[in-house]
Length: 345
Ligand SMILES: NC(=O)c1ccc[n+]([C@@H]2O[C@H](COP(=O)([O-])OP(=O)(O)OC[C@H]3O[C@@H](n4cnc5c(N)ncnc54)[C@H](OP(=O)(O)O)[C@@H]3O)[C@@H](O)[C@H]2O)c1
Image (cartoon, rainbow, N blue to C red):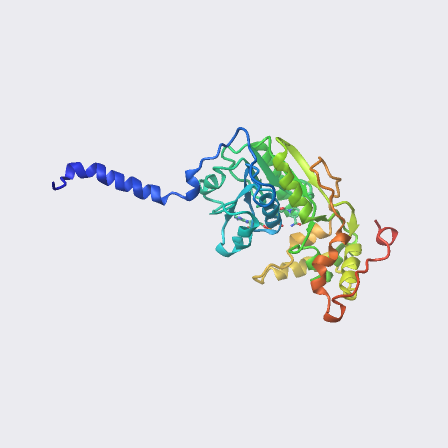
């Protein structure tokens, strides 16, 4: 029998529906509950499953990669929104098969943000921008220990403003404030080894409480098992250290002599930083000069997240050995003789 135009309609609809079904993503097939009990299962180790699904915005950054690693290692399924195809490849083997779900996103597209959050019961925002929570029970926003409305630095001021917006939108959010972090890809030890002159601002008297990026990532991962922790969680390192001590540490661990460059006065540094804005690659910004010459906050830790932070000396060699010359490469690690009186600590 020849098909008439009337009996073709349901067939066309079925084909159209079939096509639509085929366009669906694989993860559409399993709808995980957004709330309710989270059941862990599976064997211990890499193939364990916590039952949680976490979305990590900013997963391709410095803190992001370690946070994804800690979550995935514990057996949490991690949704990793990315912008650049090549930037997320290293994250894929951090979890068991199917545990790392890659999703392309654009910060300006609400539908894409919602797609990233659809199955998650906890969201980490490491981008430093407020995101739409779309009914997700837990929201963890990463800010900065130095976030303050009265900070002379525009960056730290904007961090404080961001925290206010997060609080307004999600009163139950956990706002995590780590201090400046050190690690393999940091902008602290690496910059000190490469550009010691920029750390000679403020007569090297600026004090910070550097914290290991692994400890911050572990604290973020531990938050998953805390049902609710509204408010601010400060995550500084264990010790308050001056730039002078840190430069001496870098110099003694790398066996590279101290920089003989003079201490740069703030107006000169500001003028140089403004001029450096003309180049297209990231250089020291005027705001970083302002931040580096002002008092950094060194508040103690708040809240208990099951992490005892490591001292910077415990890891310095791991991140600084690459700055040693060939003849010094395997020499023993030597630390500056004293931390305290000599460096104004
Ligand atoms: N690093 C520190 O010492 C330190 C200390 C205290 C607090 N914090 C805070 O911790 C958070 C993470 O720091 P981090 O050092 O890991 O930062 P980072 O290395 O600069 O990474 C930033 C991440 O945010 C993403 N991102 C930036 N702008 C974006 C945009 N417009 N749209 C979408 N994604 C965007 C980047 O994605 P792409 O890869 O696609 O660019 C990257 O994944 C930040 O809020 C930072 O202020 C950092």
